Image (cartoon, rainbow over all chains, first blue to last red; front, side, top):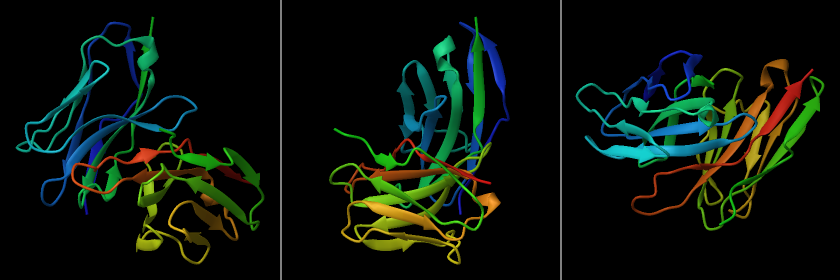
Length: 112
Length: 115
């Protein structure tokens, strides 16, 4: 089956800093790739996704590009805010989205 | 549209007791999933339903966990008897069918504490 490896957290940044959270995957075929976010006390929310190589997903200033050659889907944001503090999960979906495999999550803390 | 609903939000029980969680997916979503998220880990799929049939329950501990989706809409996940290691957040997700519908939508989860 698929597997996902994320950089360990917590990641602590100052407001307006640049963010990168690394994610690499192993999979058979061409999975869809996702970033989910979990704010404190809330459920998982889809942040962005990409369904094929070289696709770029984007939402709320976050971006991630599906890199088939490096099997990566790194999450980036140019200027983080305190409100971005959350746990971020990278995930792959095989079987047309039928089975999600998550990474262990990366906690982001943004300070003033 | 309304999201995935789950109840209760929190539950505390003693080991060896039984507990049940309820999930109502987004209207019209044929596929329903139950995940277990242990603190500090990513969610792990327990069971997947397509309408009222089980598609994948390979990671469900069937000696103590059971789930049903009798009418192909809402679903119940039960643990009997509970163990300490079952302490986790239980997440329900749903997904519609059709081309370009590979996104799962998650409910808020039920946080279970087993003492």
